[in-house]
Amino acid sequence: MFQGASAINLDAKGRMSIPAKHRDALSIQCEGRLTLTRHPDGCVMLFPRPVWEQHRQQISQWPLQARAWQRIFLGYATDVEMDTAGRILIAPELRSAVGLEREVMMMGMGSHFEIWDAAKMAQQEQQAIEAGTPDVLANFSF
Image (cartoon, rainbow, N blue to C red; front, side):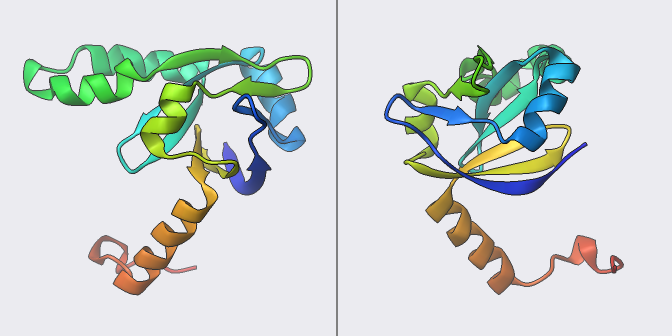
């Protein structure tokens, strides 16, 4: 289970260093083999390859009415591998599609990560807070 937030800077080539706290787990879980794809909320999702392969299998079986969503998830999917320095390359097309600039946030979301443009994420969080707690969380408390 991946959790926690990490502030990261993309380099000039669009590479991102995986934080050390996650790098070891990803090396063990999937030998550094990862898959990136677009999320319709405006971020990049990063999956360990075995986890992505399960999702890919499900997505490929969606009915024709979901073809546009297949294009979003499968069309942008890119297999990557961590290099010896623990970096991955986020393809320019994927960075452009979600508006990733230099400063990004990597968020652990359980089975995968979300990679957000830092400014965009701050804006999304502020909007969520201003909107208040959704009804589906009415019975949740710490």
